[in-house]
Length: 214
Image (cartoon, rainbow, N blue to C red):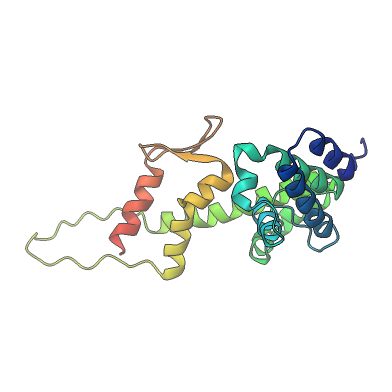
């Protein structure tokens, strides 16, 4: 495998055609990234790097994410690759707990640290969504009431705070942005490439379920 390019070289290339203001911002970001490369766990996610950079007078998270922030993203990618990881945020303690023994076996069989980090994040996300889906299934039984309509109906079971938070997270704007997903008017969830993630009615059904439990 080809050795990654030294980030200092990338910085020099990016600064060649940049304005003085952009050059200063790149240099601040570069120092933040260099510091991140020496910390554990390695975290080159835009949210973390942007927060640290802004505190040092450099580009913020939103500035880096903007279309005009491609040069900042390139520098972050260079440092992440050089450190043997990606821009993907490292697994949290909760995500690691979601990994079962088979998942760990899969990760242990991957030698490339970059690929291992990506696969680990994907597995943890999959397990989280599976748990959320199980919560949704547990609350989706249809009950047909054949009793006299004048008899008061029993109150529908209420979601616990934990279940409510799980359902809110499943259709949150933060999740859609992070995974590059889009919610269609029909409630269908698609990727930016047009692939179906969840079938029509998914997001709408969750919203109705949350409204019923308000």
